[in-house]
Image (cartoon, rainbow over all chains, first blue to last red; front, top):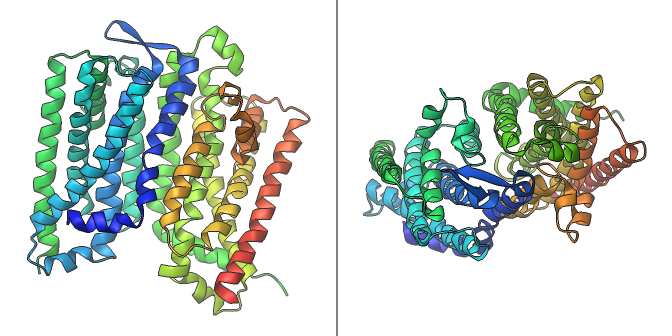
Length: 246
Length: 257
């Protein structure tokens, strides 16, 4: 399964390559451009420059969107129109192989982007701690969690119109998960709700790593994402099995 | 001979009656989320007397009209890429239409009229959101819906002309990443163009989106610059007209001759 995607993308390498540009554009616009208006943000009692605050969030967001587009839009196309999975199941491969193959492909792709983006952050001086190196495996974990859940969900979708909702959810998570402003701007009753959304957890994890502000919460984020990953992969396997088994 | 473009237009209207749910929800909910998160949320970090002086008001007031124009562009670019190639290659709607008395010009005009409606819907949704957030203080702001449609067409027509010539959809990702995203982010929507490096500024001013953003912002502020507003409108019109001519020619070449 993994190999199939490598071969398929060999002809579209520039689609692959330019994928990296998106978070970079966002970083320059909303991090640095907007940062000139914002100045600094107070995090954990310390003032940090706005780009240092936004950059880790962009990394988490791009890990999420990368994994979600691969496992929802692209996978839906392959499931329904390209009939790729029907073809594959006619070989000795089993549904679990498809699920794992697709997710690991999404991860390899996301991992390449994350590594490049982290390199850029380091070059611009936005990584303030050696723990920042751990942001790379963290981004992969985030990609896995979202990829697995996305794949499980996309087996329930019947038409492209449903993807309007997926797009909507992505934007809502993107904007509201303490990506662009700290959590304490929310009214008190809303803070606990936002804290437990998946992207908020992911952003917090990466931000704690790149700024070096580790705490017990860091462990909680990791456990949260692990649980999501396991639930997603089990769900996806069961559903693909049911959809494709003759 | 009378143009039959309205017949082609009806086709899109008819399809939309079956598929409106997802997009209506996102069209009207997204502006609220965007303005809430960036306008109010990030605004809290930005707003202080000095910055507000430079922006001509709170960050929310600065952002909202710009985001209207930018969101319209995102929507119409979606409508004039994948759906266009789909109607050529996958659904073959265009071939079906050409088998009727409809001519190339009618179909393109009908399709673009539909895209203009989508642009109008997006603008109207933003206008409602701006009203809800208390940004609007002048009736001039109602004109942002028209500016939204004009900005939408200024971008939709050239993109349509490009899409109709494509054999495969893979170049759209590139167009999206190298065209749509930078346009969205650097056309003075989120921060003034004057803050960009001076090398890039002329590029930003040449972007049709900046002209739409500027017009919307001045309309919402109720303060039009006498020489700039006609220039903005003229520039957007020029893009829309040239784009339409190219789109029609591309359609003719691809599907008729």
